[in-house]
Image (tube, rainbow, N blue to C red; front, top):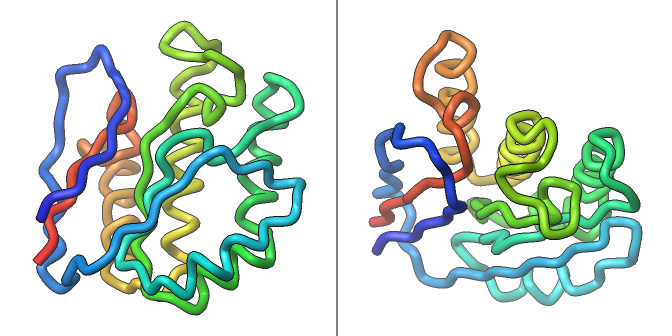
Length: 170
């Protein structure tokens, strides 16, 4: 079974698909449109579904304005949300996602948004941190390996234009 998350990108660069043979994909949970400053009791119900993968399908966070500071604060607030962290801490869920306009911190944003690469990087770090909080060790290791590779100039998620990936499960 293959799961993909994507956003449009003008780049033709690609990286290898991620292979997750140790994950038997039995259930995928997905959602979007999180307002991190509001209570999020749904995470408890989502946790009970025992999903193998959680997919942010866009608008993982909303912000109060279009500044980069507000975007970073919104991602931090979501990562600190007690119900979200409990969901990540108590499950072995792998977190993936596709970026949408509010994930750039601006309504109807796209490739023309200012500091686009910084905003994409902030989203990628949000997904990486979500996996670090999760008990899913394989994805946490893969995220850390890709981040190290990117820092060394490789073709990891942190140097690729846009946000797109495919994941193959066992």
